[in-house]
Amino acid sequence: MGEAELSLAAVRDALVREEDSIVFALIERARRPRNAPAYAAAAAAGGRSLAEFFVREAEVLHAKAGQYQKPEDVPFFPQDLPSPLFPTKDYPKVLHCFASSVSVNDAIWKMYFNELLPLFTVDGDDGNYAETVALDFACLKALSRRIHIGKYVAEVKFKDASQDYSPLIRAKDTKALMNLLTFKAVEEKVKRRVEKKARIFGQNVTLEDNADKQEGNAGDSECKVNPEVLSKLYDLWVMPLTKDVEVEYLLRRLD
Ligand SMILES: C=C(O[C@@H]1C=C(C(=O)O)C=C[C@H]1O)C(=O)O
Image 1: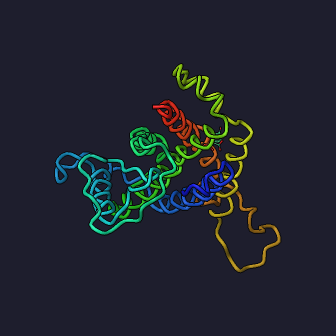
Image 2: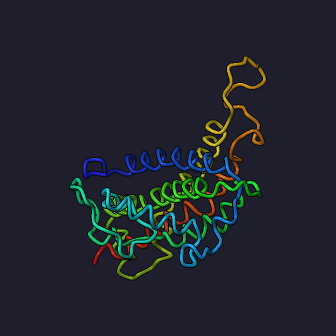
Image 3: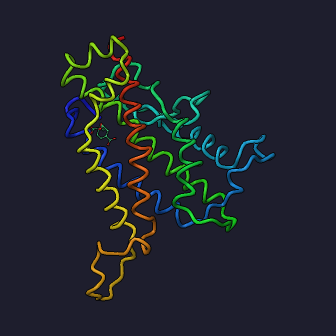
């Protein structure tokens, strides 16, 4: 995200676009059952699970190809990641320089595997573990990107009202900062929109004319991911974690 794009409206548009990636990533993962063995400690990976092994190795590849240069692209395993092998674009630095180190990926990891997966995958084991963990990686990346865009949200809010934010930052008043950056009406709209996207993107599209089943009117049980799961995901985890990123960024904004 460049300087010219840095307005609250533009950053919110970016968040809206990320919703599509999250809904589609979950729809793709939901094609496979839970596949629990992919998450169990495996001797072949030194006691790590296949899922962790896959994400670590994939991040090494992505880093070599030039990923993780932007503050919103945060790796889950940043320790010892290699440098890019190819020239990378110089992104305009619109955030404070510590922005790259703000990460809530540990919380995203725990939430995804412990809370979210059981909500949108069916119990079962079809043995397609390699495919399954690749789909998990896509979900994790989309969630992490969305949540870490909170850094830009915080920067814009700070610039728009630094006189209100600065005293709270100096007092390290986390609670008051959280209240100041929270817009309940926006959050309600976000929840309703992601639920609607899951309903629209997750229906089966056919060519048969059926007056009772206009597109967009699929029953929730026919959707590939239950739309209520999306609204719950945003309510309980995505928006609170985005706000944690905002607060963490703001607390160091005056350093
Ligand atoms: C991201 C923002 O900050 C907060 C977090 C929101 C979210 O994660 O979607 C929505 C509204 C705000 O409470 C915003 O204001 O747009």
